[in-house]
Picture (spheres, rainbow, N blue to C red):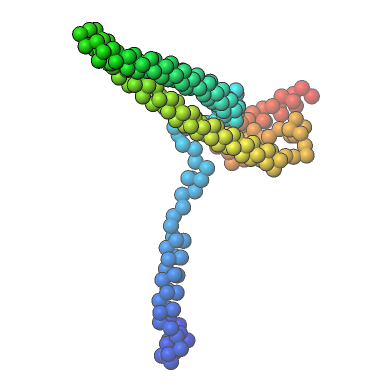
Amino acid sequence: MTQEELDALMNGDMDLDAMEEESASAEENEARQEVPVDEKEYGKVEADKAWPPPPPSEDNKVVHQLDDVTKESEEKANEILEEVEKLGDYFIDSEENLESVQETLESDIELFEKLGEKFPAVKSFAELKEKNEAALAKIKESLEMMREGNDATMEIMDKMQFQDIHRQKIERVINVMRALSNYMNALFAGKIEDEKRVASATHIHGDKTTEDVVSEDDIEALLAQFGEKK
């Protein structure tokens, strides 16, 4: 603390709370500045990763693969919907046929009941009535199963709509990726064609990993050969 700050404190012109907050802030800034930074971590490539990345072949083109996925997904989804629709039609047709059989059985049961009342000595009427009632119970059970199956097909068709939603999401991602690609191409575009550019240097002073570098001895030997030819 300086003499001026001490005098201000004695005179009551300085806020102790503000001084403590300012001191704490200064300590935090010093702590942040003292954190060591490992410069080797910048641009570091993991050892277990393949480098360089795979070439842009047909198997590695991301947008190309996503286009195939959306196309095949749409085709398969349409095929599934067609089959589910056929299945629903089968349930409806079978339900109508069973309802027709149900009406016939109900009529037969009513007829055998009247015949049994009129001719109580004929036991076959009562037996036929019981058989028709048993068949009618199975028909009603089958009708219930047909209705449940038809409802299940409708649920499948509703859930298949989410497949189309997922396809649209993928297409939206593709559009964003293409827009970014076009933006990057425009951003890095140059006035000179790549074929007309000067070739990049194989080795720059300070490089340690270049393998095909010509040494100074090789250069001197090459110059000496040119001198002998002259």
